[in-house]
Image (tube, rainbow, N blue to C red; front, side, top):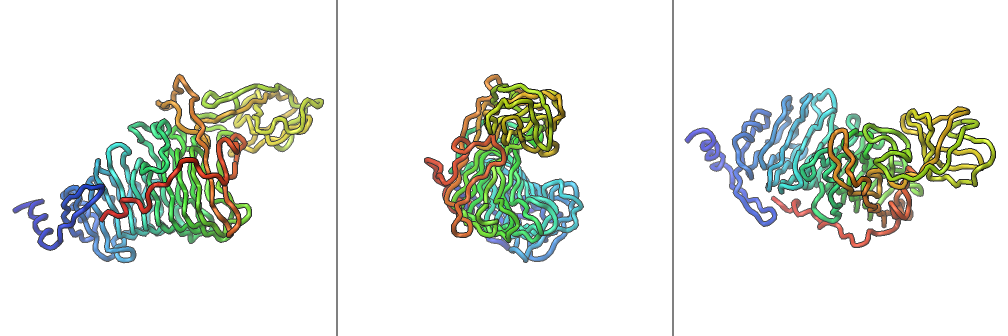
Length: 488
């Protein structure tokens, strides 16, 4: 008996054969005991079969090289505080997992600590899957303790449950989620073109975790882009927020697509009023219990960054951009004076606040070259600040006023024809996205305040793009606990 057969025979002699039951399928899996080193774990991974288990013993192990998992194994530690892996890898993930078609991969019972990683430019734990091939992930009963890097999930269907994520002095967001390859496309384009599917299993679920913040600020438990779809439910969240990116600062990859946040407990220490920010797509926010987030002004903010600034390759929502739905110009004028976020014209051509929610665009261009109109008098317009620069006027500058009816991928919009290419190519039917509002209901702060959405930009309109204190019609949350939590 040689090689793998000998290894398997020896393992079976000292370990029980375990039975996995998942979605009605069962398989025999052998248990292999590593010594906790990189070489041992990687060597066993290279020899085992789908459905097998590799254990990590109690002890502290510093890994200076990556482990790649390409089979649907269970990597099982002795428990948090018992099996500790210190991350001393640079330039590559500590553990990189490629999920297997029609199989479940599981990481359980391990504490991950920083071991000297020099930068946080890559995911420390990185999972890559597919929404079409039946692959699944479960990461459970682990502790991610102030790593210098994130947990990254790309196009992953499954659940992360009963983990503890601690942020102290190093990286901000704990989990970065994107669905870059949804439906076999890239940049999240496939996710944006697909239906939303709230209440289904077509998400990565963050469930029954603890998100602790031992630092001074209020970092996100998540960041997300490239068509990300995820659910945050039944978690304990301390001085942290739920964050996403939109179709803007990440470049060609699009923004987050669909998010559910419910039945969580948010506990703050009076640091600010924000529970999170949604910068694109659709959000359901309901049945959360909140305290210590500036009760009385607590909100989950909806923002469209392109309404106030320009981003490559999408440009800005300035009222003329062909990625958006626009109308106008409604007025052309010449500046008689300019001030701090204001421009004035001669005479008294306007009625008070007739241009609120419209866009002013300077003919001379520049960056950002436009801004949302916040208010106006008979002859003076006050407009918004940009994120990275401000529109300004000098006497003699000419301008026009437009209306952005719908901005690409803004909060409360979804679907549309499939975009392809890099730089992106506009489909013939564009912009054919549809309005799917965000809904907030039954979120209680301080025992009294109903918490809903605040809008960071006027292009996001109440009663159209979002509804506060209103359950989503016909919506039922996905079964809880997640069925994968019951897998053993």
